Length: 253
Image (cartoon, rainbow, N blue to C red):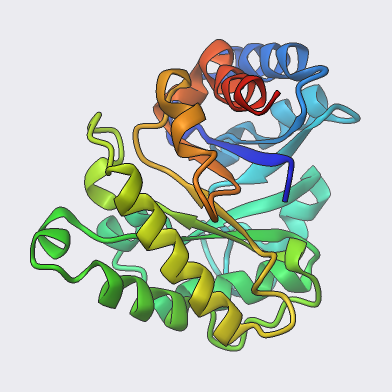
């Protein structure tokens, strides 16, 4: 897939004024850049950001979805509500939710199915901890998480889902796996996708996430089976967020 997908996870940061300003800056700077962009503000910022990115090259995403439909689920936000805001992407199974809220692969799969049912593309996150990597368990962890998180998930097209490989130990730490490590992990993910999704797995986008910045983006995002990036801290500044895409485009030119 020639165009890279650059998704920004703003996490629990910012204010209404800051969300609008950041979204406007991303829209302005992304013009003419040959990449696909998604910004995922906190749920409280969806309405503000939606008005800014509407009709622009930048898509709107959410940081989580509820596995259930509308009803008695206090504090949750359903996919039908998110669709009304204009959300076309949803992060599910981020390591922070898997760790902080004990989200299981089964719950992640249910959320992915709920998103798909409403026409929202789930960005399904998987990745190993530093302890698991040290023990040589990366492949086993990715295998278990991907199989569990794709249970009964049947996208009609490759573009209907995205997989994000985020080594937990690299998120926000400044530590970056070697090119060989990323290539090996993403190749394994690709082989699993082809096995689990014979009709679409060959073309499903695989993103890398974990301390990506403009300075290392060109090297990472041009590796085999890396179709874009899920960005955390660097997505909070438009220059660095769009700069990641610019670096890749420049290298490919």
